[in-house]
Length: 251
Ligand SMILES: [Zn+2]
Image (cartoon, rainbow, N blue to C red):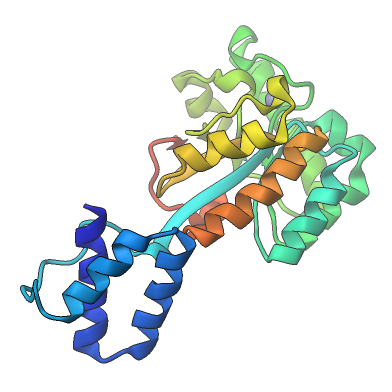
């Protein structure tokens, strides 16, 4: 599959006469350590597989989208994370706790000003399905109001603590629920290298990565994850730039 995809890309480049396309592919192959791919590339150029295949079976490298999401902040390491994201020109999504937003107002404001998406992770990190629907909606509404006061953005996305959500909440609280597809358990292992390896190993087009910016190991891991996955052709997007995704549930 990988080889076929590479051949599609190369054929397209040759047919269209875009020297730049071939050049960027070469860069991708190098980044992947793709010696075998490079050999196939040469064979394709020599015309051993001249049949044009239908395109679109796999996304081109440049369109592989992935989202970094951070729960439980803002915290004391969030500024370090924002610095690293800025250096790399990467936008992420922060699902903040109201209580922490109160105590880190400037950090939250900065995150919003620098183009990150702010979502709701409840005011007190509560288990929403253990409350009445009315109380749960109030918890979310109060958090939205606080985030709006600080950032001028009114969140539409919620990451329910522990992923616990229900159809009744969807129907009553009018927020879009966002789960995740890669969970390295960073809050538990506190080991930068293990977090990075887990995420890089599981990364796919459309993955939503769950991390917690209240831990320094997680912040360090996030920046390393960006560097590694960008080399592999991934583009980091905010949740609202993800498009259709089974982990994002609109009412
Ligand atoms: Zn949480």
